[in-house]
Image (cartoon, rainbow, N blue to C red; front, side, top):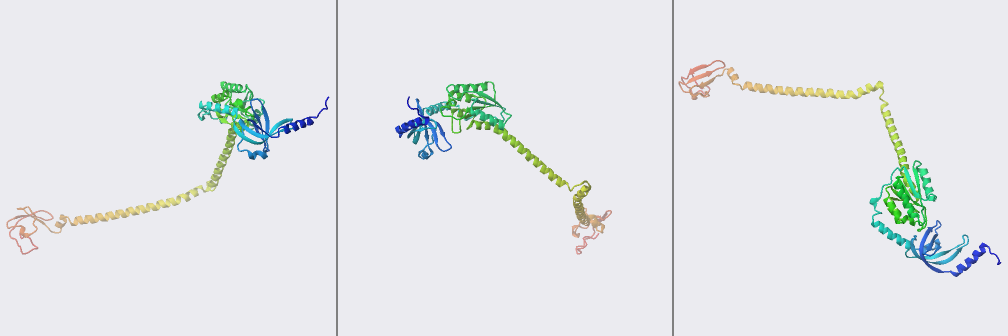
Length: 407
């Protein structure tokens, strides 16, 4: 038998031969399973319909990139083959990377997206409102996946009163899409939940393909129960996200969305309760402070102190009013006396009372004011204050102006 080799020795020989045989190569393929690391390096795979190779691009070469790599892109990379002894695999270490087009999967998804969008499956008008306080949350996912455990842990911590129903399904592989659509239809048929979370944890573009299959997209769009899509990580996208009523960047975020309102409302109620309590207590304290001086013993005295100035003002106003009315009455009385005196002075009877008489010429019927208004022989009617005197004119003296007629 040949001399045996250790694993390290064999790996070293393979590494020496591979790395020396492919020191600089250019490879074209479709980007898959893109995984940026926290250290800044990029890990991914390049594939075509027949094969796949792992690849890496270290952060000291990222400055040469002029685009953001995403699963499904068709790339041309330049680099070298390297063997990683600790894992016993080989990979392509990229020095340069350029975009050459869209891969087959992305092209297929874009075409499917246009067709379904034309049917209106992604329209905002179709979106349903996620209930504020769901009593039952349905989870359409793999029961053994980490996504379900994350959702359960968050719901248990944030809203333990929510009832959870898990609809077990495949989330990867050829039969996954039909299985996912069937679980969504069953949940709707029996009205088993108030809201559905449909999704899975992260994976490559190929791993997430079932959530972009037409049967799943239609099931989500036709669901009477509001659907939250939680497929992969935040950078992952699926057609299920577009058809769902709400997209969550991760399954954990979906759990927070269906439980956030309950917790926030409870916290707001507690806060408002304290605010109302403090406001009421503040007003009560102020009322007690204002009422403290008004004891039973001095309440009447304080009331009189308030009322007395008002009564004085009323008395002053009454006296002023009476005085004003009295002055007004006295003024009217004086005016009335003057008017009466004027009337009495001008009265014909007052003139007659002083010894004057009214002489009327019976021939003409006129009152005699001048002696020449009468002729000798005219009969005269003389009216003193009392009685009547009848006379006949004998002579008229025209020289005496003060005497109008001589009888």
